[in-house]
Length: 417
Length: 104
Image 1 (cartoon, each protein chain N blue to C red):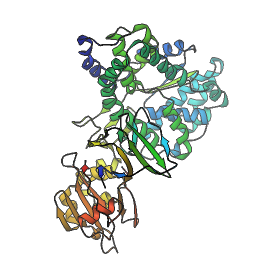
Image 2 (image 1 turned 180 degrees about the horizontal axis):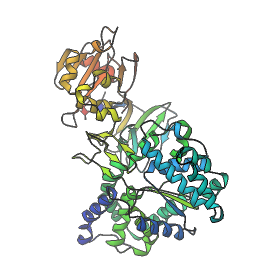
Image 3 (image 1 turned 180 degrees about the vertical axis):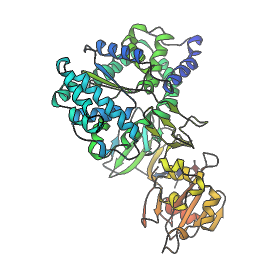
Image 4 (image 1 turned 135 degrees about the vertical axis):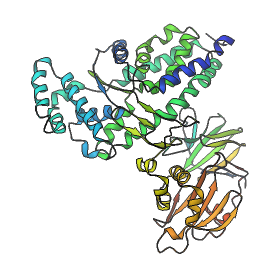
């Protein structure tokens, strides 16, 4: 039992934070040989036969390919328009490879022939038609619980029995929490949300499941870094041995979707742009992009519509800002359009300290009075919020009270951030 | 009445917990007071000395020790021991001509 870390061991925290943050944020092309060996080891260690491995170009393509194979339904019309043609080409390719990987060798040639025969006419229809029941059956269920979740639980227990509570807490806070913030919270979570947001109702359930049944590859860096520290800095080799396959995959590729006889695995993102605070941010293109063009647009850590990022600020109208329901998205639009320009659209009723009450009636046809409260964020420099308040509000204090629930009850918090 | 505001989260001291509240379990060891929709950010409390309760959609925080509420975009704030009602700032949408809770 390790109850105390030596100064040398504590001195290695930063090394592992750097190592796993670098892995988590890598934009290099996947090392396919290393990843495939890692996947096979994961399956073998879980008592499963090694799967057929199909490479996909993004986590979205992982999920869509699985949806087509498992549901055998057209999903194209259920996907948001923002998903580009290149993603579809990639889905077609991955479905074809899945079909070829899933049928017996004796019939593979004829299936391949039928798949490729009409490629010139319609890639999409051809891959759709080629997914038969035998292919669907051969893929079987997800084995995420066997190859990843149960391994995680087992290693958690083994390492937990080998280190004292304070040591565990110290490494958790110093290594895992830091990598979590830089990799999962900043990037991985946004990828997950964007994959889910890219599809509509009819395939959402399937793609949603695929997200939760995935291993997150490079984005699993936080907990893999934690155990890497225990192995390398504390000598807990046998306790962490089951992670060798998962480590190999995560060091070399993106998300993977493990099924009994097949595993879809994604390339890493090839574009990743962050601001000085480590948040997703790019004012001229996607902040995250995969080789097929699937991307995430974001400003200062807030996921944005493509047009919000790519439209020049002078072409954004006040309507755009005011129509946006998310206060965070509105905040970033306000930053882009400029506070003074926004104020110029309205008429200032009152100004005091970091607050202004502005009548924006000119934006709303037929509305005689539309007060909005403009506020400086007390925690982030140069960040403003603009929120509509009831037409009953004629002063800043009334507006503050109304926002907190009752225009006649004074809201003066002892602490505000 | 003692009031704290952490971003769009309103924390108002009350005298006691209403009857028949249901305990809300922690997630990943944290009390999630409010979760954001576009950023994945959340107003959370890691300290052990508090419990989040719910009654008909209303949230209550019971802090038996001083605790700290944190969020990625706001300074941490200390909350003294006590019972608090948790609320959300509202806004008025002039396009829809209706009020609603702020969404982040």
